[in-house]
Image (cartoon, rainbow, N blue to C red; front, side):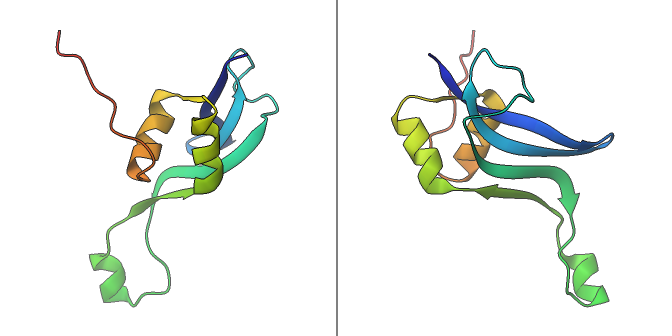
Length: 103
């Protein structure tokens, strides 16, 4: 029984939104997962509640929300992250960057 941590897509056309889920490796992308451990919004968002000058100067960000303790647990019991989730977990500081072979 291989368990993977991967992204499950939600949202409308041209407005993607992803749940970071733990699911069986052979299950469909949008099937019911074992657990939802976070969310990822890849559409850059501007910070809110700022003055006009501050809003223009502020950088847009991609929103990542992750339950770090549950992610650590699933990685500890052998769940394999997908490539996209590997990058997100590296940004969160939970795992090392994936090594790319130079062949």
